Image 1 (cartoon, rainbow, N blue to C red):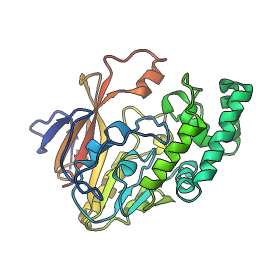
Image 2: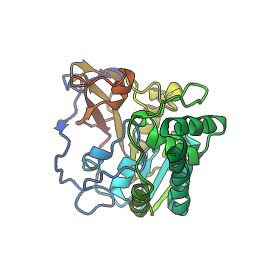
Image 3: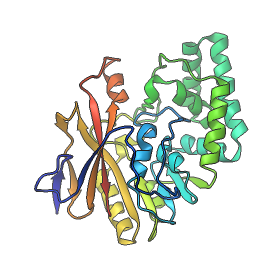
Image 4: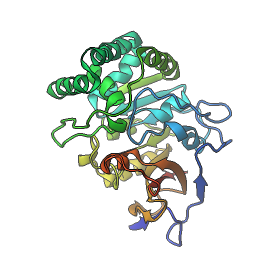
Length: 314
């Protein structure tokens, strides 16, 4: 049986409700962190929907456990990097992305070299021309070396794909970080993910591995706002909810990030949620939407403040 969920809790929802503002200090313990996850705002990848600025707030709602941490929609790995867990599996169905994370862990100097070669091309022939050449090369043969540069150079980290896999995001107006800055980011991130394993897996394959005492954090493509992003075109929320229910039956704690409210709370993203699957709901204020700015041609977004919902099975 299904009902329509909302981030304003009414008689249909029996969840606790919290409003979390960016920058808030939360004291609840999290996996692998003795006194709660602390802010970690150094991005390795630019990524639309990146949770980096408030990943510590999300993690502060995780239960204390010595189990394994799973992040089956890895993306920029903001929460995994913030937690720096002792045991973890970061996975995604997107091959070039997972190759970046594997290279970070096992061959960090190669990752730096990939980025440096492409940044030097910008200096040689100009940023926009270099970006288009690198994007064309990526679209001909998808690969992690081109993708690491594109993710840091495209407009707002909006990694937009056509249904056939062609990346279509234009070059961003910003200046890509220097090789020195990127190198520092690689060194910091390698330490934070040194205990994690990375695999190219469908989320269902990854989540099958979760057992009692484990934590699974799901940050899938959002139904209302991210239909243009990689993998979103074929994503099925109902199938994910069934997979979450199976994880819960095995004793794993599952946290789901999902659409909340848009336009400063004026629009509520109603999404069917199985009754009884989640015990609590948390609202996290994530600021203004870079994706909406991209969709609106760079307009200001004073009325586009976004809240994400965290649904917790415990």
